[in-house]
Structures are given as structure tokens and as C-alpha cells.
Length: 160
Image (cartoon, rainbow, N blue to C red):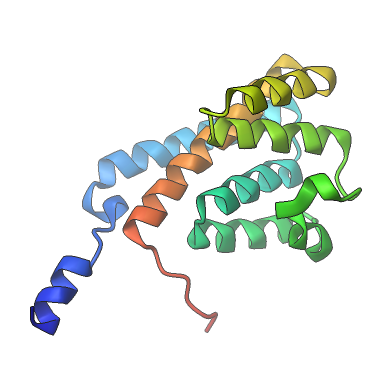
């Protein structure tokens, strides 16, 4: 196979660009979820922690780049963000954050039923029904964006 033919078969379709109506609907959903999270009392830092943890699990470099910068703008620290993948092994996260992170992980990997039950029980102890719903919606939404970016292979380029 020639280099040109290989490039044509390896090149990914940017599904957000190819199907803008569907992508716009996802953006609108994200905006609605952001409002639900704010109404439930979830701070921007907590929302960004959920976005980052889900993006770590899904291996979405594009979303990790976007949401790391957003978390820093929201006031989070490089120290906390640096250990987020191992949040269970630190004392850097509050009980609410830990419950939200566990719930986000369970939402991202729903086939792990026992982990889901444990995460939900933990969330029940420290989060309201509105907060639980908001965390789940944030995780669902970032999971969708992760899939758009991973399957499209959205690039992460150096800053100009």
C-alpha cells in the first residue's frame, strides 16, 4: 500500500466536524449539565476533577489538556491534579470530592457492579440527591466528549 493510501485509511474523521448538528446537541447538553451542577452546589473545581478523572480513565489527551487548564483556572493546584489518578492513596481530597470521584469512575465503568454499589453508597453519605445526579450527568457528558475526541484523534499541540 502506498503512503498516500495508508494516510487515507489511517486518517480519522473528526466526528464533531463531520456531524456538526449532533456535536452541537452534545455541547448544548454539556451547557445544561453545567447549569445543573451549579444549581446543585457543585463547585467548578469539583466538576473539573470529575472531568479529569473520567478523561484519565478513557485516555483522552485532548480533554485532559482542556480540563487541566480549566481546573487550574478554577483554583485547583498542580499537586492535587498530579496525583488525581491515585486519589484514593492521598489525603488531598475531601470526603465530598472522594465520593464524587468514585461515583464518576462507576459511571465511566458501569459493568463493575460491586464498585458501582460501593461508590453509590459512599456518595449517599455525603452528597444530596441533586449532587449525586449532577455528578453522574457530568461524568456521562465528559464520557461522550472523550469518545468524540479519542475516536477522532483530536490532537494536542504545543502552545504557540
